Length: 235
View 1: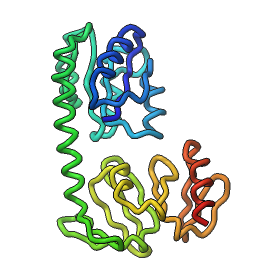
View 2 (view 1 turned 30 degrees about the vertical axis):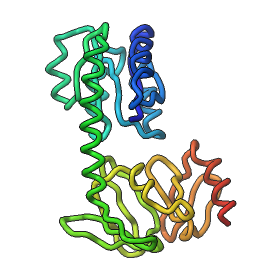
View 3 (view 1 turned 180 degrees about the horizontal axis):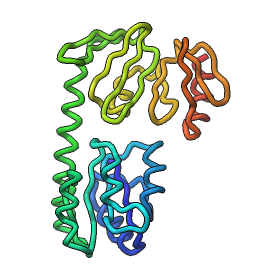
View 4 (view 1 turned 120 degrees about the vertical axis):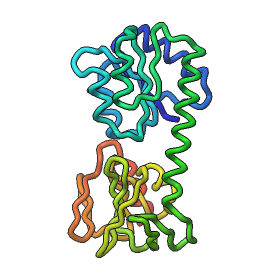
């Protein structure tokens, strides 16, 4: 699981970092001393789990947790036991008191891993493999056949993806990262945090945007070099 630490105390961040590095199931992607920095990072990078301090200057951990995707799990870390009830109101996986006890840490992580597995299973059940030409997507209690060649682009919207076809949109509950893993990489490219495009349908592009029929899709700063390198190689 990809995780980050958000805590304004350097020593607290270092303590959690040590515990994470001793846990093989966790991949530490970054550490932040405030919610704003973490939020900017999460716009461009998929994060499965946050170790989040509650009492921080500016945006508190509780406020931050209320505004992130439900697919991103939260384990609160704090020195104040009185915040326990608040943490449960935002569906936190667990609540760790500083200094964090290693045994309690591992119990909380195992709980997060188990819940994350359930979320992935739920998402994968919404996709039924067909063959190299198509797959089926569950939407509105039905399964729709989607031909890879007919996909213009795929848009991520919180806990859902919107598959844009020429004259139809199919919405299913799934993470953009996970559906990208199912797509044939020779035709599909991630171009920003919210969009995957089918390169076969790109009509034109400039340094900042891609144009597919009447749709204009921005190229994210962190994806720009990879897009031009990969797309030109495809061409």
